[in-house]
Image 1: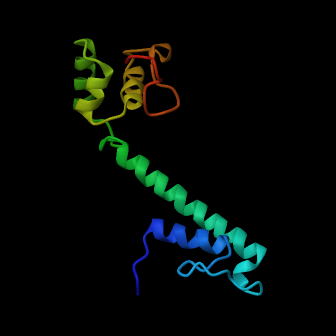
Image 2 (image 1 turned 90 degrees about the vertical axis):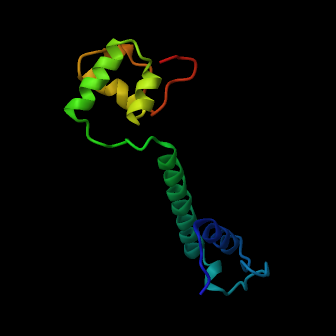
Image 3 (image 1 turned 30 degrees about the horizontal axis):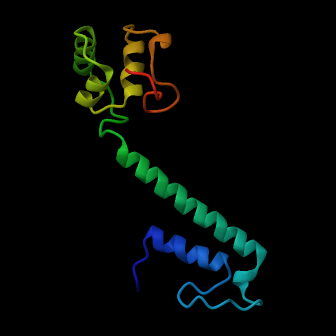
Length: 132
């Protein structure tokens, strides 16, 4: 049995949605179940789910390895010390393998900055044009 990865599965689904055989490109018979509107809509949903899963995986792979990890008391102390020493948020985030948003959120929670002093918003990276 041939191995099918996400990209290949998306290609097969696209061909079927388009009403053609994925290998030969020949048009599918009109009486084929694959020409049924409910089946085609289901294939569209399946392709969308594969695309979304692939996008999630790519996004997770681009995030620092510390995303989601619980903060220890020692790490919080190191964070405060680095911040008070004037290290940039970017450097602190890199040193702790965390996102800028996580660093700022923790600094806010620890009373070191206010929400108005944050550079990040509802995303994991600094807003363009602002320097953390």
